[in-house]
Image (cartoon, rainbow, N blue to C red; front, side):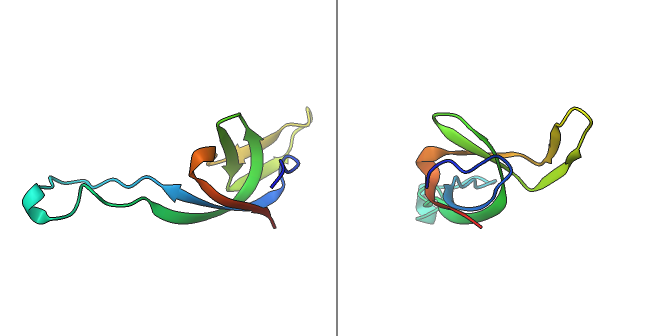
Length: 87
């Protein structure tokens, strides 16, 4: 997908890193070899860099200076993106 205009609603499918918050041992036979989990995130496209895109769960109203505020911005590395599409 080519870069959408700012504040466009999009859906991103991406691989999320996985964390295990306890000790794991080789004798467990699992735990430290977990695969990344696919995630679907819906939000507003708010920016990009050569290595990532940024989306926000909510947009604020326009201020007098034209700025739109963002709530909970999420930065997703491009290498983790499976699919991205406009809604």
